[in-house]
Image (cartoon, rainbow, N blue to C red; front, side, top):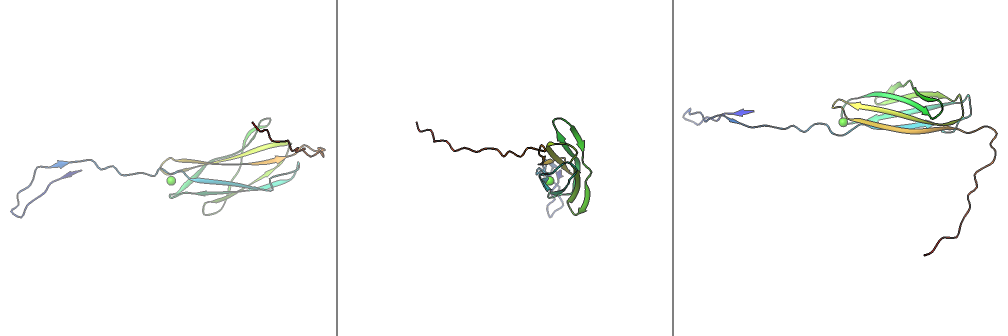
Length: 138
Ligand SMILES: [Ca+2]
């Protein structure tokens, strides 16, 4: 930006140039992923609620569900209102599945939300055992 001053007699100053730095949006969107239920049996469907919030408009860049053995597959998000989305996931195999949703704002900041749904191994009726041990004292 260049500024020139003029006095009451109409005398102009020499131009003065200086730079103005405008602070940009540096805050990424906050993404929350809430599946319900989180534990499924094969064939059961979980409804996954996604909320994206930011100080500016955002776009959901990707939504996926992944598992070590089945790989990563895209989730289809349906808008359910301002900054809210929903996806359905029907369990087809056992395991733990990580849901990952990435949103991006207009300034290019990315926010990621994650959650898990679990499909326990059928027939495993044996609960884990938690045992109390005496504390080690040095
Ligand atoms: Ca932002």
